Length: 468
Image (tube, rainbow, N blue to C red; front, side):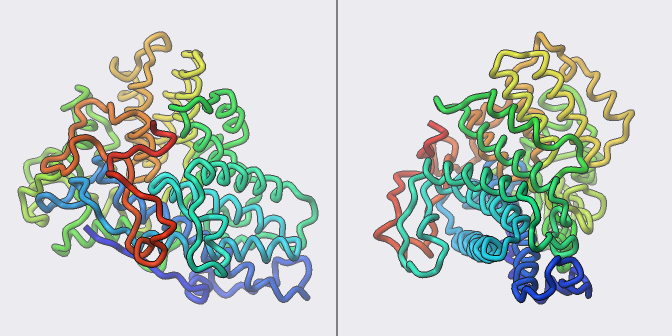
């Protein structure tokens, strides 16, 4: 399994963006902060997307999208893995966002400040979903070398505050500097799109607490009313220094650097093994084996073939939506919003609204990855899918959301909220835990230099506060 860490400098991102002068888009050409602001905008939009990739790179094994080709792989079997590189990359990104917010606020660059706060909330919420309590209030300004850890629920509340403040910043009139459409690698200077992303992220986080007394489906739906309405709204990265990361994984596999192997559970959920219906999204993710069918790898058991003989299914390096050349990195999508709406409506007792949103989520995801209209319609008319409003269940909603969230780290949040109750979802072979994984261990980069503040972890089966 790879660990691809790309250190993106502002200079390299300037090359990606082209030769357009920063001052061309600013209202006040005399402000010297312009170039640093847009340089930070480029690096933070890029690296925020890579936070999603870096964390999805290992959580995809926890939810059995992927499986290691190696027997008893640590990530497959819930053994303790040191994610120091991931931790450091996320905190470097958040430190840059801290600087961007501070600079933007100081010169009235409200659009930059708003986008940065929303990105900070996204990075921080992902960190919170993995480790629970993490440094935030003392963790970013660089003056405190051994910062205290904010309690896990306090981190969550900080994320919501950042989102609300970010949306408020975006709504301020007369920004002194406008977002640069070239340097903004996620929404290309579209302030309305950033607001929608803020509301989509807010809905995700409000839905995250579905197992707690804090959960309010009405608040979730209220946030969604201001979020995405089409796939054109999706927050995604489309520009890369070289290969897009999942394409790199798929390409590596063709070069015998084994990676990107699909799990038996995921393949069975999409071919006709588990649900008795073939999902037309599967050919947009992987290729058939040399046997003319789709075969996954059992988590924890390891491979059958060599990786180059097509005995199992891998991420497709040529035609897979998620792993083809230039494949987008998806942060938050319209499809996810529709499934959040389906769940919130279902929990609110409104089955007709839940069913409508459930079908809309399936259609949005199929349209996104390129399934043709006929194949999409045939699938959605199958009796196990088109169950009718009276028969919609949370199991069906979560099953379809699981497919639509492929490779996204939020899928692991969903699995824990759902208590891993996906049909035929089993512990990996050779698992070191007797139950499913619920968190990751703090990295050695923290336990070695900030041990006095790192909270104790009993086991990787310990639940975070929203999961209890």
